[in-house]
Amino acid sequence: MTDLSHAQDASEDVRRALDPQTAGSDLMQFAVHRTAAVRAAVAARQDCPVAALTSLGFDHDRTVLEALLRNPKTPSSVVRKLADNRDPRVSDLAVQRLRNAFR
Image 1 (cartoon, one colour):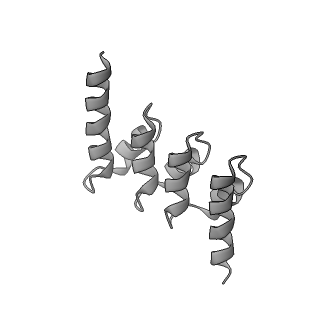
Image 2 (cartoon, helix red, strand yellow):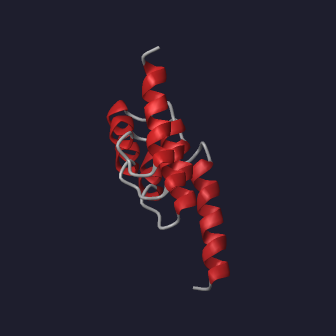
Image 3 (cartoon, helix red, strand yellow):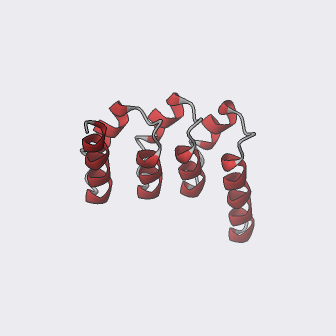
């Protein structure tokens, strides 16, 4: 597969991951996609299955984790775990979300 065809496939998968008609079982598959943009699209969906959101909390890509932290449906246990992330951009966002939750 060429880089161009991989990019086209990933772009199509991002579109499918963002499509409201895409079912939760398909989102589970996209949550382990090799392309971070696809995983970030899944992490941003408020109708994403909790299991996928929890799994995405172990991702290493900052854009995925930031999308996860911006999703109000992300379980608080995942947010608390990300507050200890070694990337200060991720941990700061998680800590801010935890602070806002108690206001």
